Length: 152
Image 1: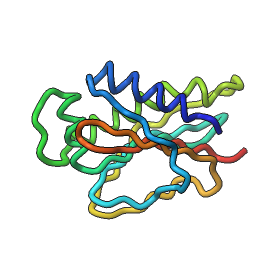
Image 2: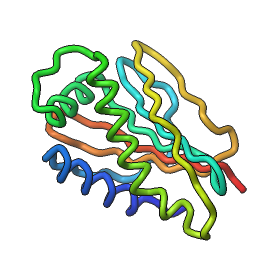
Image 3: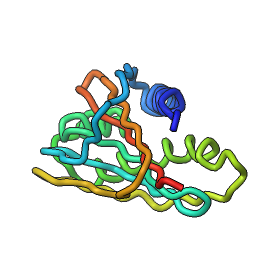
């Protein structure tokens, strides 16, 4: 699965044009991350020809900062606005990647965004999947964009 550049391009385009935030990508991770602390994960699923999900994982501080940039308001707690904004960012990223995921002409549908937030949680979405996780830095801190696709 060679989606690194697609994830970087889509993330830059959406974050820089929709919320006016400069993002700096890092190197794709070599180990899968599934445990999070004081974080928020916004996910959109892929169904049909290919199954999987796209997720944005951000520490609380970063999620609040990005939401403030997105909505143009001061955000000081994880609330419904933060969950909605991060879910919408995940939705936009999934929509941008959908044509590349369905590149063989198969039909792929997107789910509604889901958001998980907590002091400590573990996410296991697909057991046998190809995955890539790309870290990004913004002025508020670091976050990750992950893509998992079920092995065919």
